[in-house]
Image (cartoon, rainbow, N blue to C red; front, side, top):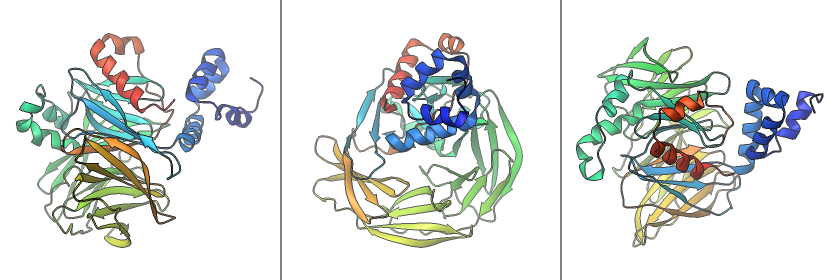
Length: 393
Protein backbone atom coordinates (compact mmCIF):
# COMPACT_ATOMS: atom_id res chain seq x y z
CA UNK A 1 0.00 0.00 0.00
CA UNK A 2 2.99 2.30 0.52
CA UNK A 3 3.56 2.28 -3.25
CA UNK A 4 0.06 3.45 -4.16
CA UNK A 5 -0.28 6.93 -5.71
CA UNK A 6 -1.82 9.37 -3.24
CA UNK A 7 -5.00 9.85 -5.27
CA UNK A 8 -5.70 6.09 -5.21
CA UNK A 9 -4.80 5.85 -1.52
CA UNK A 10 -7.19 8.70 -0.75
CA UNK A 11 -9.93 6.99 -2.76
CA UNK A 12 -9.60 3.95 -0.47
CA UNK A 13 -9.22 5.86 2.81
CA UNK A 14 -12.17 8.17 2.09
CA UNK A 15 -14.45 5.11 2.19
CA UNK A 16 -13.48 4.21 5.76
CA UNK A 17 -15.41 5.26 8.84
CA UNK A 18 -13.39 7.28 11.42
CA UNK A 19 -12.79 4.27 13.69
CA UNK A 20 -11.36 2.17 10.83
CA UNK A 21 -9.29 5.13 9.69
CA UNK A 22 -7.83 5.38 13.20
CA UNK A 23 -6.85 1.70 13.05
CA UNK A 24 -5.11 2.27 9.71
CA UNK A 25 -3.12 5.13 11.25
CA UNK A 26 -1.91 2.83 14.03
CA UNK A 27 -0.83 0.03 11.69
CA UNK A 28 1.00 1.97 8.99
CA UNK A 29 3.49 4.79 9.65
CA UNK A 30 3.35 6.08 6.06
CA UNK A 31 -0.46 6.32 6.10
CA UNK A 32 -0.39 7.97 9.52
CA UNK A 33 2.00 10.62 8.21
CA UNK A 34 -0.13 11.18 5.11
CA UNK A 35 -3.32 11.62 7.16
CA UNK A 36 -1.72 13.88 9.79
CA UNK A 37 0.44 16.09 7.57
CA UNK A 38 -1.57 16.57 4.39
CA UNK A 39 -4.25 19.28 4.85
CA UNK A 40 -5.82 18.25 1.53
CA UNK A 41 -6.54 14.81 2.98
CA UNK A 42 -8.21 16.34 6.04
CA UNK A 43 -10.39 18.54 3.84
CA UNK A 44 -11.23 15.75 1.40
CA UNK A 45 -12.04 13.13 4.03
CA UNK A 46 -14.13 15.57 6.07
CA UNK A 47 -16.15 16.56 3.02
CA UNK A 48 -16.71 12.94 1.98
CA UNK A 49 -17.67 11.78 5.48
CA UNK A 50 -20.01 14.70 6.21
CA UNK A 51 -21.79 14.16 2.88
CA UNK A 52 -22.55 10.59 3.99
CA UNK A 53 -23.70 11.25 7.55
CA UNK A 54 -25.08 14.79 7.19
CA UNK A 55 -25.07 17.64 9.69
CA UNK A 56 -26.48 17.91 13.21
CA UNK A 57 -27.65 20.70 15.45
CA UNK A 58 -26.85 20.99 19.12
CA UNK A 59 -29.19 22.80 21.49
CA UNK A 60 -28.94 23.85 25.12
CA UNK A 61 -30.01 26.71 27.36
CA UNK A 62 -28.39 30.03 26.44
CA UNK A 63 -27.38 30.73 30.04
CA UNK A 64 -25.58 27.42 30.44
CA UNK A 65 -27.08 23.97 30.84
CA UNK A 66 -26.63 20.57 32.43
CA UNK A 67 -28.58 18.97 29.57
CA UNK A 68 -27.08 19.02 26.07
CA UNK A 69 -29.21 17.76 23.17
CA UNK A 70 -28.17 16.80 19.66
CA UNK A 71 -30.42 16.19 16.65
CA UNK A 72 -28.85 14.50 13.63
CA UNK A 73 -30.01 15.62 10.21
CA UNK A 74 -29.37 13.25 7.31
CA UNK A 75 -28.22 14.49 3.91
CA UNK A 76 -31.77 14.03 2.61
CA UNK A 77 -34.72 15.97 3.99
CA UNK A 78 -37.00 12.94 4.33
CA UNK A 79 -35.16 10.94 7.02
CA UNK A 80 -36.26 10.61 10.64
CA UNK A 81 -34.20 11.24 13.77
CA UNK A 82 -34.60 11.46 17.53
CA UNK A 83 -32.74 13.79 19.89
CA UNK A 84 -29.83 12.32 21.85
CA UNK A 85 -29.17 13.74 25.31
CA UNK A 86 -26.14 14.12 27.56
CA UNK A 87 -26.63 14.97 31.24
CA UNK A 88 -23.61 16.66 32.81
CA UNK A 89 -22.50 16.47 36.42
CA UNK A 90 -21.94 19.55 38.63
CA UNK A 91 -20.74 21.94 35.90
CA UNK A 92 -22.87 24.04 33.55
CA UNK A 93 -21.83 23.90 29.91
CA UNK A 94 -21.75 26.95 27.61
CA UNK A 95 -21.21 26.78 23.85
CA UNK A 96 -19.38 29.60 22.07
CA UNK A 97 -18.93 28.27 18.56
CA UNK A 98 -18.98 25.41 16.09
CA UNK A 99 -16.87 25.53 12.94
CA UNK A 100 -15.47 22.87 10.59
CA UNK A 101 -15.97 20.01 13.03
CA UNK A 102 -14.54 21.75 16.10
CA UNK A 103 -16.50 22.99 19.12
CA UNK A 104 -15.61 25.91 21.38
CA UNK A 105 -17.19 25.45 24.80
CA UNK A 106 -16.80 26.45 28.42
CA UNK A 107 -17.07 24.02 31.33
CA UNK A 108 -15.10 25.33 34.31
CA UNK A 109 -12.56 26.33 31.68
CA UNK A 110 -12.44 27.07 27.95
CA UNK A 111 -12.00 24.06 25.64
CA UNK A 112 -11.79 23.28 21.94
CA UNK A 113 -12.87 19.74 21.04
CA UNK A 114 -13.38 17.49 18.02
CA UNK A 115 -16.11 14.88 18.66
CA UNK A 116 -14.97 12.84 15.65
CA UNK A 117 -11.38 12.33 16.83
CA UNK A 118 -12.28 12.48 20.56
CA UNK A 119 -9.47 15.00 21.11
CA UNK A 120 -9.79 18.18 23.14
CA UNK A 121 -7.56 20.95 24.40
CA UNK A 122 -7.84 23.34 27.32
CA UNK A 123 -7.35 27.00 26.40
CA UNK A 124 -6.18 29.94 28.44
CA UNK A 125 -8.86 32.63 28.43
CA UNK A 126 -7.40 34.80 31.23
CA UNK A 127 -5.83 37.18 28.69
CA UNK A 128 -9.20 38.02 27.12
CA UNK A 129 -10.91 41.18 28.33
CA UNK A 130 -14.28 39.91 27.14
CA UNK A 131 -14.12 36.32 28.41
CA UNK A 132 -12.58 37.37 31.72
CA UNK A 133 -15.63 39.60 32.16
CA UNK A 134 -18.08 36.85 31.17
CA UNK A 135 -16.51 34.24 33.45
CA UNK A 136 -14.71 36.48 35.90
CA UNK A 137 -16.51 34.88 38.83
CA UNK A 138 -17.82 31.43 39.61
CA UNK A 139 -20.98 30.97 37.54
CA UNK A 140 -23.83 29.97 39.86
CA UNK A 141 -26.67 27.52 39.24
CA UNK A 142 -30.00 28.56 37.69
CA UNK A 143 -31.54 29.94 40.88
CA UNK A 144 -28.72 32.49 41.27
CA UNK A 145 -28.04 33.17 37.63
CA UNK A 146 -30.26 36.23 37.12
CA UNK A 147 -27.58 38.80 38.01
CA UNK A 148 -25.12 37.20 35.56
CA UNK A 149 -27.41 37.13 32.51
CA UNK A 150 -26.02 40.37 31.11
CA UNK A 151 -22.49 38.96 31.18
CA UNK A 152 -23.47 35.64 29.62
CA UNK A 153 -25.32 37.42 26.80
CA UNK A 154 -21.96 38.80 25.62
CA UNK A 155 -21.30 35.33 24.15
CA UNK A 156 -22.45 36.78 20.83
CA UNK A 157 -19.23 38.83 20.76
CA UNK A 158 -17.15 35.66 20.35
CA UNK A 159 -16.26 34.45 16.86
CA UNK A 160 -14.69 31.03 16.25
CA UNK A 161 -13.03 30.14 12.93
CA UNK A 162 -11.20 27.02 11.78
CA UNK A 163 -8.84 26.37 8.87
CA UNK A 164 -7.56 22.84 8.07
CA UNK A 165 -4.16 24.34 7.22
CA UNK A 166 -3.84 27.18 9.78
CA UNK A 167 -5.69 25.83 12.81
CA UNK A 168 -8.33 27.76 14.73
CA UNK A 169 -8.69 31.33 15.94
CA UNK A 170 -10.95 32.99 18.45
CA UNK A 171 -11.96 36.61 17.83
CA UNK A 172 -13.80 38.73 20.39
CA UNK A 173 -15.38 41.98 19.24
CA UNK A 174 -15.25 44.82 21.77
CA UNK A 175 -18.06 47.39 21.63
CA UNK A 176 -17.31 50.98 22.66
CA UNK A 177 -20.29 53.14 21.62
CA UNK A 178 -19.65 53.57 17.86
CA UNK A 179 -16.08 52.18 17.96
CA UNK A 180 -15.26 48.49 17.67
CA UNK A 181 -12.02 46.74 18.55
CA UNK A 182 -10.95 43.11 18.27
CA UNK A 183 -8.94 40.71 20.41
CA UNK A 184 -7.51 37.53 18.88
CA UNK A 185 -6.26 34.20 20.20
CA UNK A 186 -4.81 31.05 18.68
CA UNK A 187 -5.54 29.18 21.91
CA UNK A 188 -2.26 29.97 23.68
CA UNK A 189 -2.26 33.74 24.10
CA UNK A 190 -4.44 36.80 23.51
CA UNK A 191 -3.59 40.08 21.85
CA UNK A 192 -5.48 43.22 20.96
CA UNK A 193 -5.54 43.89 17.22
CA UNK A 194 -4.38 47.32 16.10
CA UNK A 195 -7.46 47.47 13.90
CA UNK A 196 -10.48 49.45 15.06
CA UNK A 197 -13.50 50.62 13.12
CA UNK A 198 -15.82 53.57 13.78
CA UNK A 199 -19.42 53.58 12.56
CA UNK A 200 -21.53 56.63 11.72
CA UNK A 201 -24.49 55.36 13.76
CA UNK A 202 -24.94 53.70 17.14
CA UNK A 203 -26.60 50.29 17.31
CA UNK A 204 -25.85 47.35 19.57
CA UNK A 205 -25.02 43.87 18.34
CA UNK A 206 -28.19 41.81 17.89
CA UNK A 207 -28.89 39.76 21.04
CA UNK A 208 -28.39 35.97 20.68
CA UNK A 209 -27.51 36.32 16.97
CA UNK A 210 -24.21 34.50 16.45
CA UNK A 211 -21.57 35.82 14.00
CA UNK A 212 -21.38 34.22 10.55
CA UNK A 213 -18.10 33.13 9.00
CA UNK A 214 -18.00 33.57 5.20
CA UNK A 215 -15.08 33.97 2.78
CA UNK A 216 -12.54 34.09 5.60
CA UNK A 217 -14.40 36.90 7.35
CA UNK A 218 -16.51 37.03 10.52
CA UNK A 219 -19.73 39.05 10.33
CA UNK A 220 -21.62 40.40 13.36
CA UNK A 221 -25.19 41.60 12.86
CA UNK A 222 -26.35 44.77 14.63
CA UNK A 223 -29.92 45.53 15.71
CA UNK A 224 -30.48 47.94 12.81
CA UNK A 225 -29.49 45.32 10.20
CA UNK A 226 -25.98 46.68 9.60
CA UNK A 227 -22.89 44.46 9.89
CA UNK A 228 -19.42 44.66 11.43
CA UNK A 229 -16.98 42.46 9.46
CA UNK A 230 -13.48 41.34 10.47
CA UNK A 231 -10.95 39.10 8.71
CA UNK A 232 -8.87 37.21 11.34
CA UNK A 233 -5.97 36.63 8.91
CA UNK A 234 -5.52 40.10 7.43
CA UNK A 235 -7.06 41.85 10.47
CA UNK A 236 -8.98 44.13 8.13
CA UNK A 237 -12.36 45.38 9.35
CA UNK A 238 -15.28 46.92 7.49
CA UNK A 239 -18.75 48.29 8.13
CA UNK A 240 -21.75 47.25 6.02
CA UNK A 241 -24.43 49.97 6.36
CA UNK A 242 -27.38 47.72 5.48
CA UNK A 243 -30.72 48.41 7.16
CA UNK A 244 -33.32 45.85 8.25
CA UNK A 245 -36.61 46.51 10.04
CA UNK A 246 -37.51 43.53 12.21
CA UNK A 247 -41.26 44.18 12.26
CA UNK A 248 -43.35 42.47 14.94
CA UNK A 249 -41.70 42.09 18.37
CA UNK A 250 -42.07 38.29 18.35
CA UNK A 251 -40.48 37.91 14.91
CA UNK A 252 -37.72 35.27 14.87
CA UNK A 253 -34.39 36.06 13.20
CA UNK A 254 -31.69 33.78 11.82
CA UNK A 255 -28.41 35.16 10.46
CA UNK A 256 -26.68 32.65 8.17
CA UNK A 257 -24.78 32.03 4.95
CA UNK A 258 -26.01 30.68 1.64
CA UNK A 259 -23.15 28.32 0.77
CA UNK A 260 -24.40 27.80 -2.79
CA UNK A 261 -24.59 31.49 -3.65
CA UNK A 262 -21.73 32.39 -1.29
CA UNK A 263 -23.60 35.25 0.35
CA UNK A 264 -25.09 36.31 3.67
CA UNK A 265 -28.77 35.75 4.34
CA UNK A 266 -31.19 36.91 7.00
CA UNK A 267 -34.22 34.72 7.70
CA UNK A 268 -37.18 36.41 9.36
CA UNK A 269 -40.10 34.35 10.63
CA UNK A 270 -43.55 34.66 12.15
CA UNK A 271 -45.97 31.81 12.85
CA UNK A 272 -47.51 32.42 9.43
CA UNK A 273 -44.63 33.36 7.10
CA UNK A 274 -40.88 32.91 6.79
CA UNK A 275 -39.03 35.47 4.66
CA UNK A 276 -35.49 35.07 3.32
CA UNK A 277 -33.41 38.19 2.65
CA UNK A 278 -30.09 38.23 0.78
CA UNK A 279 -27.40 40.86 1.28
CA UNK A 280 -26.97 42.51 -2.12
CA UNK A 281 -23.74 44.33 -3.01
CA UNK A 282 -22.85 44.62 0.68
CA UNK A 283 -25.41 47.35 1.14
CA UNK A 284 -29.02 46.14 1.04
CA UNK A 285 -31.15 43.30 2.41
CA UNK A 286 -33.20 42.16 -0.59
CA UNK A 287 -36.30 39.97 -0.09
CA UNK A 288 -35.65 36.88 -2.23
CA UNK A 289 -38.15 34.36 -0.93
CA UNK A 290 -41.29 33.97 1.17
CA UNK A 291 -42.41 30.63 2.58
CA UNK A 292 -45.64 29.67 4.32
CA UNK A 293 -44.55 28.47 7.75
CA UNK A 294 -45.39 24.92 8.78
CA UNK A 295 -48.73 24.59 10.56
CA UNK A 296 -48.41 24.62 14.35
CA UNK A 297 -51.43 23.98 16.56
CA UNK A 298 -51.80 27.09 18.73
CA UNK A 299 -53.40 25.10 21.54
CA UNK A 300 -50.42 22.73 21.79
CA UNK A 301 -47.61 25.19 20.99
CA UNK A 302 -45.18 26.16 23.74
CA UNK A 303 -42.61 27.96 21.57
CA UNK A 304 -40.86 27.61 18.21
CA UNK A 305 -37.46 28.49 16.72
CA UNK A 306 -35.72 29.08 13.43
CA UNK A 307 -32.83 26.64 13.94
CA UNK A 308 -30.60 26.83 10.88
CA UNK A 309 -30.46 27.11 7.12
CA UNK A 310 -27.96 24.78 5.44
CA UNK A 311 -27.58 23.59 1.85
CA UNK A 312 -31.07 23.21 0.48
CA UNK A 313 -32.83 22.90 3.86
CA UNK A 314 -34.38 25.29 6.38
CA UNK A 315 -34.91 23.84 9.86
CA UNK A 316 -37.72 24.86 12.25
CA UNK A 317 -38.15 23.44 15.75
CA UNK A 318 -41.62 23.33 17.31
CA UNK A 319 -42.00 22.62 21.03
CA UNK A 320 -45.36 21.42 22.34
CA UNK A 321 -46.68 22.02 25.86
CA UNK A 322 -47.00 18.29 26.46
CA UNK A 323 -44.17 16.35 28.16
CA UNK A 324 -41.36 18.61 26.83
CA UNK A 325 -41.94 17.06 23.40
CA UNK A 326 -41.38 18.71 20.05
CA UNK A 327 -41.00 18.20 16.32
CA UNK A 328 -38.18 19.19 13.97
CA UNK A 329 -39.55 20.35 10.62
CA UNK A 330 -37.35 20.67 7.52
CA UNK A 331 -38.25 22.74 4.48
CA UNK A 332 -36.69 21.66 1.18
CA UNK A 333 -35.79 24.93 -0.55
CA UNK A 334 -35.54 23.19 -3.93
CA UNK A 335 -38.70 21.06 -3.80
CA UNK A 336 -40.65 23.75 -1.86
CA UNK A 337 -42.07 21.20 0.57
CA UNK A 338 -42.13 20.70 4.34
CA UNK A 339 -41.08 17.40 5.91
CA UNK A 340 -40.48 16.07 9.43
CA UNK A 341 -36.92 15.23 10.47
CA UNK A 342 -37.97 13.69 13.77
CA UNK A 343 -38.76 14.40 17.41
CA UNK A 344 -36.96 16.72 19.80
CA UNK A 345 -36.80 17.33 23.55
CA UNK A 346 -36.31 20.29 25.86
CA UNK A 347 -36.86 21.23 29.49
CA UNK A 348 -38.78 24.40 30.24
CA UNK A 349 -39.23 27.39 27.96
CA UNK A 350 -35.83 28.95 28.55
CA UNK A 351 -34.03 30.75 25.74
CA UNK A 352 -32.37 28.09 23.61
CA UNK A 353 -29.02 28.23 21.81
CA UNK A 354 -28.56 26.30 18.54
CA UNK A 355 -25.31 25.32 16.86
CA UNK A 356 -24.88 23.57 13.54
CA UNK A 357 -22.27 20.82 13.62
CA UNK A 358 -20.64 19.22 10.58
CA UNK A 359 -18.11 16.45 11.35
CA UNK A 360 -14.51 16.99 10.30
CA UNK A 361 -11.09 15.40 10.77
CA UNK A 362 -9.42 18.71 11.72
CA UNK A 363 -6.92 17.84 14.42
CA UNK A 364 -6.76 19.41 17.88
CA UNK A 365 -3.08 19.73 18.75
CA UNK A 366 -1.78 19.45 22.30
CA UNK A 367 0.09 17.23 24.73
CA UNK A 368 -2.52 14.65 25.72
CA UNK A 369 -0.88 13.72 29.02
CA UNK A 370 -0.49 17.37 30.00
CA UNK A 371 -4.13 18.06 29.10
CA UNK A 372 -5.35 15.14 31.21
CA UNK A 373 -3.12 16.14 34.13
CA UNK A 374 -4.46 19.73 34.12
CA UNK A 375 -8.15 18.75 33.80
CA UNK A 376 -10.27 17.14 36.51
CA UNK A 377 -11.72 13.69 35.94
CA UNK A 378 -15.22 15.13 36.25
CA UNK A 379 -14.64 17.67 33.47
CA UNK A 380 -13.06 14.98 31.25
CA UNK A 381 -16.11 12.80 31.88
CA UNK A 382 -18.46 15.65 30.93
CA UNK A 383 -16.46 16.51 27.80
CA UNK A 384 -16.47 12.85 26.79
CA UNK A 385 -20.26 12.78 27.23
CA UNK A 386 -20.71 15.84 24.99
CA UNK A 387 -18.39 14.47 22.30
CA UNK A 388 -20.05 11.04 22.44
CA UNK A 389 -23.45 12.70 22.06
CA UNK A 390 -22.47 14.39 18.82
CA UNK A 391 -20.30 11.66 17.33
CA UNK A 392 -22.23 9.50 14.86
CA UNK A 393 -19.78 6.63 14.52
